[in-house]
Image 1 (cartoon, rainbow, N blue to C red):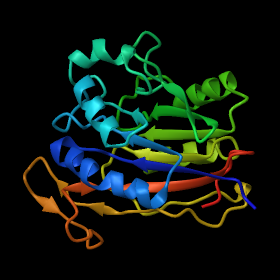
Image 2 (image 1 turned 90 degrees about the vertical axis):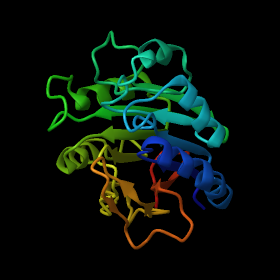
Image 3 (image 1 turned 60 degrees about the vertical axis):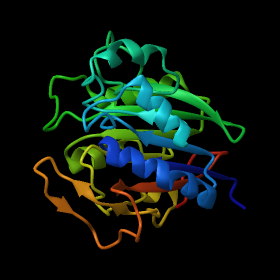
Amino acid sequence: MVDDFRILFVADVVGQPGREAVKAVLPGLKRELEPNVTILNGENAAGGFGLTAKLVAELRAAGADMITTGNHVFAQKEFVGELPSLENVIRPANYPPRAPGKGSSVISAGGHDVLVMNLIGRIFTIETLDDPFRAADAILAAHPEIKIVFCDMHAEATSEKTAMGWYLDGRVSAVVGTHTHIPTADARAPWRHGLRHRRRHGWAQRRVHRNGQRSRPAAVPDGCPESFCSCVRNCDFQCGTGYH
């Protein structure tokens, strides 16, 4: 019998339509899936660019336990001063060391500690940032006792996200890519974990592009608000590895 620990991840939350979707869909999704912890990428929550303390409170009220970000984390200037005082809201760990906030956080959920790390890729984004692979190594070295580890790899290139997945294989519970705002539908689990597949849950996205055009995949259920996409990850809390 596998000791079950369930992580629900929602991303990317884009602007007011995304926030409204979270408020409308997430509470019911949590009742259905009963996750131990819910993580949400909110870096686009403020009009598509950035985040504010007020919106952090709004997303938490909707059910987010931990909020990750990305390259737009400081797009709203007031957030530079707000971020250091916000609990369980993190920015990419491979930002310069003196950047406000921190790149990882430990949250207690379901009777277990969960380490959440936030990384950002350098290909087609910000090439001058620190190496995300070394940043991941440093975070894991600082928390050797924690078995359940979740990584939000915020990157443009699918290849860079995939590389991070293989690099952290056997050392984390899940690596999930964000930033491109659409599901790539290529979720996988490396064989080192003895897994065959990873289930992606709740594809429901209607993207509002900046040029006003819309695209809507056929999988969107009737009545779903503007934008919602999530995945769920089950893992064994004794060893930290996922199983679907």
